[in-house]
Image (cartoon, rainbow, N blue to C red; front, side, top):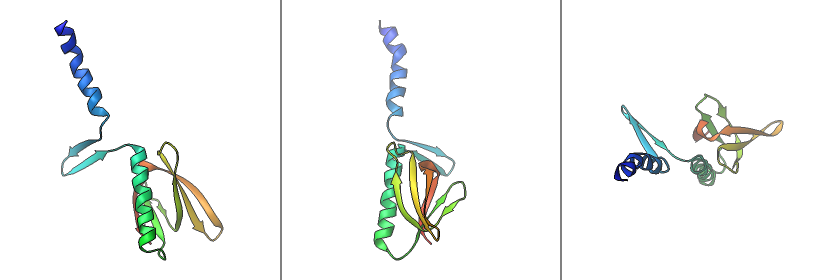
Length: 110
């Protein structure tokens, strides 16, 4: 009976470790793995902070794929937090664009 328990113990420990945020180090950089919903909430909070700090400046977002979304009017997270709806003001009106939460690199004033 003890041998059977010891056999399943490593699997139980692995299952417990994967549910918490993890940090992976590679060379001089480290990567923090968090849930998509928490990441989308952080992006929304950062957008609100930039907007509140300097409301007259335009806010842009840069994606890891190299795209820059300029003149963001609003950011709305989808229910599961894996996608963000960017509402972008343009001369033709407001345009909507969905971006994967892991593709958003940073927000900045433009």
